[in-house]
Length: 157
Image 1 (tube, rainbow, N blue to C red):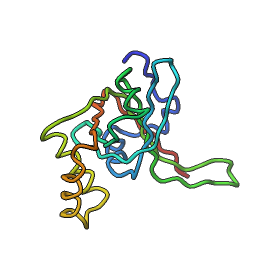
Image 2: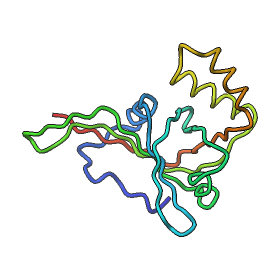
Image 3: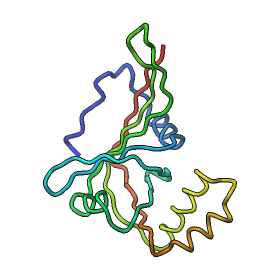
Image 4: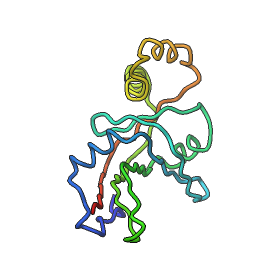
């Protein structure tokens, strides 16, 4: 991925391990894809991070699925803590950006990803979540993003 640029504000760059930690704990992120006519598309979604891979679920069809089928290279951004500093005309923030390749997963990996999503977002409802997954088996795709590059930034006062 030669078009990936280094973080401009090197003084705000965080270590990869911290970027991964941030990615693991953020509530949602924004997936960016490209349509076949070159139109960018960003959509917020819930996800889970495991072993250098992001997983999310989706309807069987739709804009993001069409874009991924057209161009599997994607970008994903998650933002953690923010704090606007009005008197300083600035913001404290932490964010992580990922570049990778998206693809559909099947079988055990698919089921594991759905269970991990339930564990992240509904830990008090694991049993109900497993039942929900089984009931919606044919209505859901699971997509993974194999991470090729990750970087993070943090600005604090």
